[in-house]
Length: 378
Ligand code: SDX
Image (cartoon, rainbow, N blue to C red; front, side, top):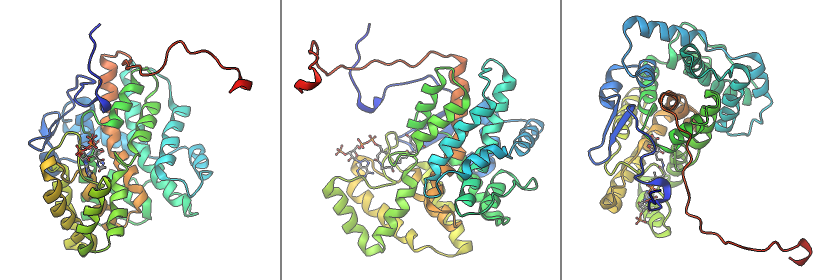
């Protein structure tokens, strides 16, 4: 058996052969199924992009309409799931509520009929359709309100914003939100996708696959960073405080949230698009003082850490976009999950097509031949 060098974080080790997305970290290039992210952000919508990722090709007009209708039809959640969610503590984090709710879908729909394309499509539709409803339901119920029924007249993104507030969203806000979902839909072998593929490789159900990936996405080194960015901007408070804050982080060797990436050594192309979307929102709905702080952070971090390839990642500007839409900060990562479900499901399908259970090895660094010491002698 070939003995490989141990790489913490499996850095640079391929964990799958995949045709879903591609990143060139030196050039700042991201493609979904060969199409550049900038082009999809400009021309596609989230459900079309999800279809592209999951089934490998852009849908025809008829295929897209049928898919959108199926997702629209399955947006409602069972009252038992709503009742279960009502008993969640209102102080709980929405990512934990989402992980529990996604897993609960398996109680109703798991058949593990993994060779049946009808079951695969049904699971894809159900997960894409119900996850936004569950997040919005938790948001309203934790405030003591009844959840809002999905609005069949609204498309995917507008309906989610409607379910959060009971008001039809501004069209520009809904459009920008939809682009945000495209940007977050997929990103090669990131931690949560790896988690999804490991879980998928055991041939468990897709609800367990998504629940495990949601758990992985929540951490502050991964999707959870978008929430921490806003807290950081709040703590910094003014443009003058930016330089001392960054110098302090560097001195303490603390990570600056929303910066750095395992693959990108230049600015994440998604951060560039998100920054542009934030500016469009500010032009229509007014400036945000945190944006001045963010821009100054980008300048100072480039000056101090640019030589290490540390630039803004996807999580740096997304929070400013959602903040302008008055979305609560702790929903930022669940929104990331709404989008990433598309990528996780694409990897689930790809993993099933040529499955081998994940079973890496380890470098044992413990003891051998130890004796058991009886309890009363310890
Ligand atoms: C996402 O993988 C994906 O594709 C993820 C993602 C996706 O779409 O799925 O893009 C989404 O998770 C974005 C990342 C969100 N996380 C953050 O913003 C948290 C802050 N960033 C980091 O902690 C860090 O950059 C990571 C976790 C994103 C990447 O970590 P690595 O590859 O393990 O790098 P590292 O922590 O070992 O750092 C390497 C060097 C170190 O310096 P040296 O010891 O070599 O001198 O870069 C420095 C680090 O100190 N560094 C940072 C830094 N990130 C790296 N220094 C200060 N602030 C930072 N944010």
